[in-house]
Amino acid sequence: MRGAAGWHDGGVPNHVQPQLRPGYPIRTERLLLRPLTVGDADALLAYRSQPDVCRYVPFEPMDRQLISERLAKQWATTTLTDEGQAVTLGIELARSGELVGDVVLFWHSREHRGGEIGYILNPDFAGHGYATEAAHAMLRLGFDELGLHRIVARIDERNEASANVARRLGMRQEARLIHNELFKGEWSTELGFAMLAGEWPIHRVRLANGRQPRATDKSATEA
Image (cartoon, rainbow, N blue to C red; front, top):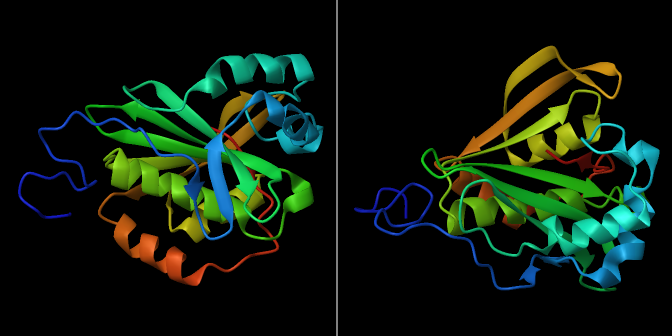
């Protein structure tokens, strides 16, 4: 839709107030992305309780009570109707029904049409490209359905696996902020990645046609 009269570069008409109301599940080549439910508590606990998984993300290891609270509140959101909201979806293997991780899309600004993605994966399922495949689907939601202009990912530099996912998605590294935040008792250097709506079409096609699982796809980032 880029360049068509009356359309934003993200594919949403200028006169339409953007909202995101996906039909679930969202299907990719090997995955189903769908809202989390109380039945996912054990699978979520399996990886969100691990200190190594949580080392470079902005939350501590979770217990069952906290996961239950998140399922009832933040993770219960299934649509985006205004800025300041986020939708978190479970990453389910289509062939087995196993929950292997989750992804999130934040809507930061209606005026500037800005968003952000994050992703976290159970390390038992690393090395198959699942995080890249799921995050690619979230970029599609943000650009093609919500009409965002710019989507970012913010990653601790020490989290090399998550940075590699952003690079494979085609996101451009725009910043390296040295010791910009005291994070969990240590100075953290943040990498800033971004993609614009005008850059998205080539990466949409490239990843859709040429997904390649990588052994380094052990993602654990959530903005």
